[in-house]
Length: 279
Image 1: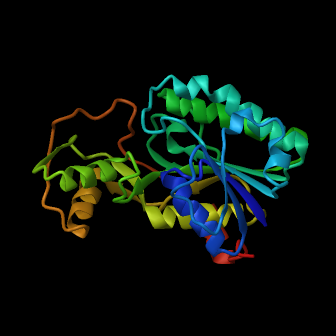
Image 2: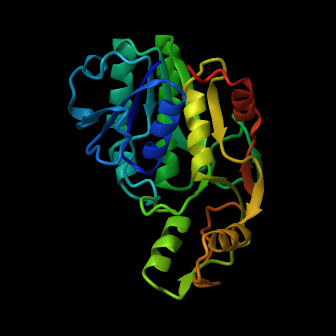
């Protein structure tokens, strides 16, 4: 299939584009800049929101994977609300002009404070502007897909573990601090349990979802297993041979972070086991 990936030059986009290409699909990769995108992709440096006929401009793709999003790690940035109409208008235009399958990147922060396993029926009560923005786009995209008879896939992402300088997660920040020669890293109590997934596995799962259309709707992109934050971070430091130490209790736990939360992995495991996402 021909798959358009927006936000392709970002931290997630780089790995997911590679995964889609490795699965044998054609990729049109769009972002403001394209310098980190796999050279096998057709790269388009552009502003998505200023293209009059994006479906035509991007060569009438079969699938849209919408990763583009500003300030993803700044959970209460006004951008999550200010940009929402632009994301909605872009997806709506793509559907009305002929796209047949739309996938978009979501977040477990849509859920808000919740304890236990999350599936597609878990109620959403987001507690940050990031969660509110993603939840609103999910509802709007699902409604548009139904109105336009378009396949709808929502990739609900969990906590990504990776040592890339491109990310803004705690793992990327620890890697940056280590590279700067810092001896300590300020940390919370670390007792909360989350669904952690390695960067490469995350990209593999996302690429698999958009390469098929038998399993749709909300699909969790994660490990499906809860693990204490302190255990995963300490293990990350060991895995990478870092010498930096965690300074526990420097920051309070965020009030909207759940004590134990993870994704139900049944749908993604079914996709991976079927193996029909490769062309």
